[in-house]
Length: 210
Image (tube, rainbow, N blue to C red; front, side):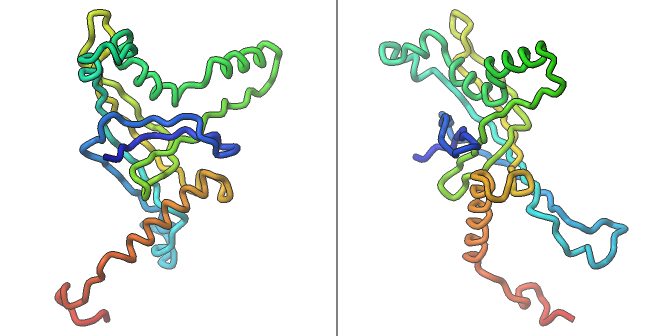
């Protein structure tokens, strides 16, 4: 069975930095698309059918992480015995942390009197849900519910709720690796849409458009 997950990519050269595979595929994936229309309620009539760009798409899911099976075979799962699922949780959390080296460098620049401290670069995050859905995202929501612990208080079962905002060519340079990945994602949608059977006016109970 294929698994969903996240891939962290170096935005400069598109090299893969880390792959995070979800232990269990979520049963539900919620996607919301907000159209980027030019028109407003009070805008010119000609603008009502124009689009500024791709819709703003958001994705939400709940991922379950469980060390129960691993703990049943302690000889082959030393990490689960010593730390539970803390390493898996930390791998997800570190996506939205700057590295300690970046924090130290920013502090050094501040102490040196640098007037403007540039924001710290982070890897490009790709949400992968099969070969046909590979899309650049930014994490907007992140919550963890730990609901079972071992005797050392290491978490051994948790639910991670994640919210993503899909990064389109409005957010990424058109010619960048991230922009190319988004365009491939949209082109896949276009191919799928062409495969959908078209309806007829008769099915709608009308004979023509006047």
